Length: 493
Image 1 (cartoon, rainbow, N blue to C red):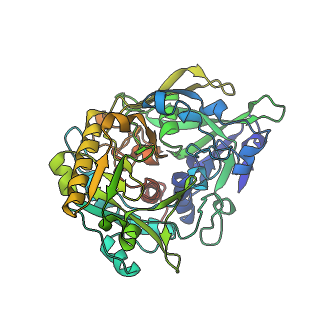
Image 2: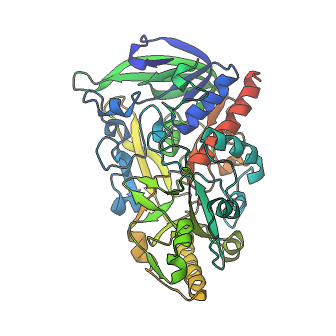
């Protein structure tokens, strides 16, 4: 069922077993898995029901609700980060306020996190779960994403594609699979022949969360409002309440933190909003590699991909199987050097790396308020650290040595020049990180907010580290795992 929040009576109370706030890959995956087990689910979305709705001139521009202040690395590189457009040609879609969320444009690059990503390192406590805990759910996520199995080993794909696995000393070839179709908007895709709106899930668009109400360690209600922009002056239309046994925030890393801060929930240890991370990407070539080894046609298949606008277009064979590979330091080299992971696009000279967790890189509340609901806006600060510089300088040196060993050569730019041109590669991570110790994070291993009995968080905001893989595949994996846990709590099979 799909309905618009402004058609819900002012003052109405909706009762449900599970309420999910946010309709991107995290929220819709959890909703799908829960409704299969007969759980009563309400899924609310602040935006319209389609990108077309966002283009409607009577629909308020998302900048009204998403605007705020961007500091740190953003100040020079991307001052409009918070409101980068989804309603103009060429604008990157990263904070979609619409039914389907970021899945409306997801290119489908899929790869699990590596085992090392979960491990403790100097200054980083690690995840409270390990890769083995997620493996069964990665297999289910591969099916949900229409991938060609859950084997991501380069050896397996080299055999399938008749290609050689590139060998660089100190580096692995990392394999990415792509969706089994060009787009997989979770709002419109079919699950077992039906869309999520065709199921018993109560999908409410134009439903903005205003407040998480709590009492004695439990969420007791959600204040929700719709808006109306038909007269050219966007304003609040109706307000209603949702009462749920269990609540899941699935609004993305920026909004998950903002919603908790607005309601003063889950922040007993000043952890909400901290450790904002991304995958910094060089805005242009930072290195050039020469030598027959890196330009051989078979190797090129595994070492890079092409880009078209904002969508990744990987290599594919005549059967439509699409994969790409990149070079990233081995786990042993990461441990030896004390650095994060990264990968190189050998064909394009671009560089993309794992950002170290930094408590001062964070989402907070701004002093300004939005003009529709009067809620405080976002103040986001993106900060890089000395460890990020070490990751760049040591891995580029490692890459240069490996290529020279093969008779090639590499030139790379110094860190200050690279740092100046870094941008966020669309992956917003951290801000409500998972931890065993409540003083070190926001949610526990089951994604339940520390100190609250029935509030959960889904999405990449719970990642304690970024790894080097695109996050959506792991987001979906964690949502499948979360749904299994929630089914147990409501007594569903």
